[in-house]
Image 1: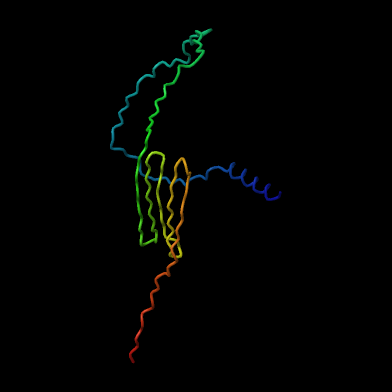
Image 2: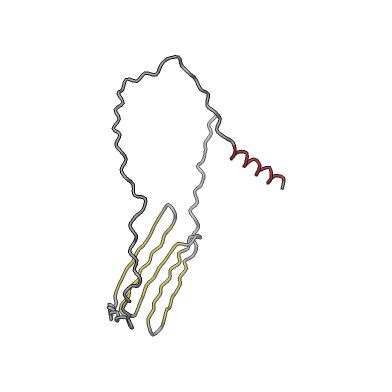
Length: 160
């Protein structure tokens, strides 16, 4: 509590403090100006301190009442037999990101596969299909892990 009172007193002291007077130096030389001061004073224009009264509207015309909204026309594009096919692959030697995917659709049947390299060196491949009759089916294949390539240290030969 003492710290709060002390902080409040310090804040009041800072707020009440005035500016320090700047040191004043006087010179014995007279002030000289090489410019002519030409004044272009104009008489001040009359300023109106009040405005005309605002028009007062006692009531507004009633707004028309809409009992129902107009129907919204919806246009939906429908393709009875959609078809597409795509594939991509990534092989980034710097990050080790190796993956690929392909998929195709013919009507209501979708078939595809994707594969990627696991951290242990194995490759996981997933083949899938989906249709109205069988639903979604996926088969997963895992290859055996491969050992990471090892680099032996170079042999140092010392000649004395």
